[in-house]
Amino acid sequence: MADTLVTYCVVHQPRRLLLPARPIPQGTKPKEMAAFLFDDAMNRRYFEKVARWCYYPATEMFTRMLDRGFKLGLGFSVSFLWQLRRWDRRLANRFRRLVSHPNCELVGVEPYHGFAFALDIGLFQEEMKRGKAYAEDFFGKEIRVTDTTEMVLNNEIYFALAQAGYTATMLDGRPWVMEWREPTRLYRHAGKDLAVFCRHHELSDDVGYRFSNVGWVGHPLTADTYARLIRETWGRMVFLGWDYETFGEHQKKDTGIFDFLKHMPDAIIKKTPFKFMTALGSCGAFCRDALRTCRYPSSAPPGQDPGVWSSSSGTPRNRQSCDLWLPHCTKPDSPAAPIYWTWRCGFFNPTTST
Image (cartoon, rainbow, N blue to C red; front, top):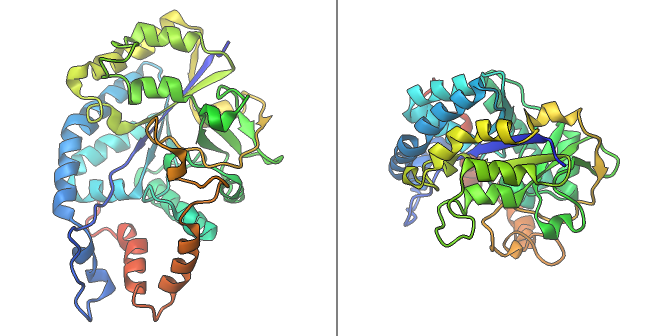
């Protein structure tokens, strides 16, 4: 039976586009184009709403949990950190205090929660490097484990991350991905040392998606019941992965999500032999089984067609158009070049620092 629990949350807010689209006046400088591309008034409204109902109470709750011995991995998109820097310094300090806790591990994230790997794997490597540097500078903590958007992973992405020097990465351990394998083991691919943590999608989605569903057979989910389900899991370890916004935004306060979260660590300690570990900490505790990673697993909502992300051959459906689009818009004389470079650079040059 499994005896180790690894928990990870990703924090993300997109920088939403301005709709309907506005024409960009001829002669507009690249650094001035953001005002025509992004709806930052709407972005701020969403940010402040989620901060009130999720970020503040969840960060306070997780801080108390870490003080009691719980361990947590946290990843932050650069688009979130960019908005955090601009609009809420007090919350930025709370997140910094949370990440600085010895029981918290800072995890790498694709900076825009985008799909750069579907455009160009070299671009993906560069974006991951830039996002890693930005988060490390923001929090003053090293990143050695990385997530990808929706935990998407295939051969190309795996080798790109291994080449970048990461110790571990993640994928969503759904049955169609794992086949006969268990998500409760640590894996590697093609003889490389890069460890692969497989998100236990059933236990994760019990909280992330089904918690407030009164029609679900498992409703209401209590901390004691969840501890029992974890205890009964076959394998070596359980890796849980959630959106940070699960707590207070996706699952509202009146569903009891914060009471569940408050009691979960104690229930696990009392009712299971589990110990809490970070992903990096558990890398040396388990041997790594071989895994053939040739598909595009994704932690998108349950029931969503995997074909949203890939074709039957495992290649992104829009790859052909991307292969044509990317070289065109990166040429200095291309009309699309200023927009492309505004997208590339917009989050890495915040106008307000904290």
